[in-house]
Image (cartoon, rainbow, N blue to C red):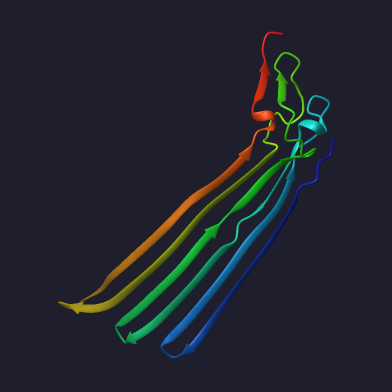
Length: 169
């Protein structure tokens, strides 16, 4: 049975040399998808679901040349995913049933009737780099700080509050 997955990608990057000592960079990337289950004789439309989502990723950076041997960099980045799955019938009351002997699925078994998952990460960092000549040798000394925050937000609804698996008849 044919299934069509749809996926699109958007991306872009912008750099700007403000002046001799300052440079900015901005980047954006996002994937969008629609992934349906494959319908088969033992996995009917009533049991199938459609997954959807996107995951924007943002980057921003600023570099400042302080002197011939010193630079300052600051960066921001983030990944913000969102995905969901819904039963094709969007039935929130019928419990899903799977018969292991016949390998047949009923409404809503393999997926939630509705679910949402949203992991995210945000980071900010800054550093100072200085090039030193010590004893005729060149050294790159860096001092920086980084902060990262992230987590996952999740919601789901099981059809009828549970799913049932039939074993041995």
